[in-house]
Length: 529
Image 1: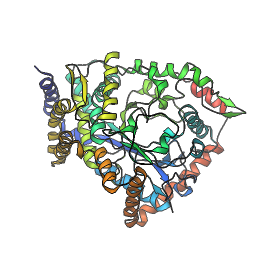
Image 2: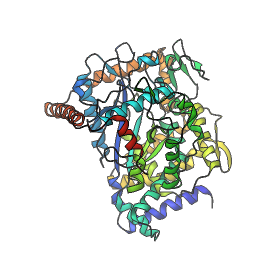
Image 3: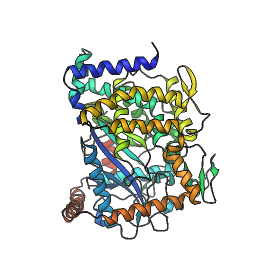
Image 4: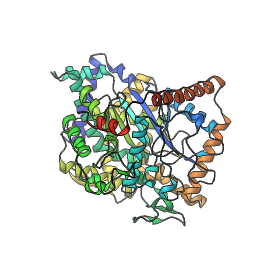
């Protein structure tokens, strides 16, 4: 039996079991949330130097509008929802509200940043005087000192995904598994994560939208890119430079061999990285003249510093370590971190892409997921590197168990094994939109010119635009579209109230702040995992 047929049978058996238990309808209740980052820019395309707009409330306590690394790097967060349409509608409302408060600024609509100055011209995000606010700020100061602030201006979309408990219960019964439900579900999510890492190169090829960067992003750094024009650099066949060596990567973290075989080995590896001194970071110093330069001198200050395309996640309590939450209560959802912002859609992501993400992730759940070894990890890293830098190269080959094969030869059987899931979701939702999404991805595999990365470069060539000119034009178009369709009065007032309440919530945190910051950090890092 060949591998493709085995995969189809594995998926079919599990889907048939769910159907027999009359539980297929639970696949309509997939839960998702979207976190979307966007830089605030000036009209001339340079990074905004203004503080986080007061009208947007507190970046520390607002439930939907915050900042990431920089004061200028906004992050929008949607509530958890079982409806794709509702998630996108809420994300659109956040955008419209923010645009209404930006005055003469724009949101940059690509993942790779706008025109940048030196590191000291990139303002680190501020979160107030509470201990938790100070910790967020010092963590970001540490990132800047370790990797440079320029790298931290890259934006992306995080897609949070979880599966209904009813599905997990049925799959556990099918296996006659005797673990606790929490342990079984956690193990299942790690199986999904392993498969996601095996196949995520496909998402980078299909949705990568960062083949080109502004020269200012790489000022003073060595790189292999070619000159597109006087102000832009690119790789001719690149898909997502954001996901490569020039983006969210860290040479220091190359020594981390993080295992996704189980929660225990995953958490132990990260815990060691957060508790053992790393000499190059010791040279930075933790404090200088009474000011913190980083939270500690370990390889990782906190878990979030570990760069990965996917993370196991659990909602934490205030001041709780994420690893402690995972060990105590298990994995609750997975967070995808390899999604570029699509400049051709107003929100950076659309329903078609989400439908494909959903069927892709269900495939990762339902197909067999053997444990990983160091050899496979090396193969995964190499395939991602190849697709990031040369994904549209007709000569590109990927590493497989059967030797190296052309990307299309690996991608097509993978798409075929996803197809039955698309058909089931179409049947459940009484639509054909999942199959349409799948077919559109097949078109990209057959013709790489249909990928976002190719379209960006082709438009730049046709219009004789630099990257900055292209991205600024897209940003202006989306801004004008949002301004032409403002929020209704009740929705505007609702967001106004959220902003005002968040400022009050931050003030209350600061008023109730007990103990000094050094003691707060000591107690935080003393938490067991």
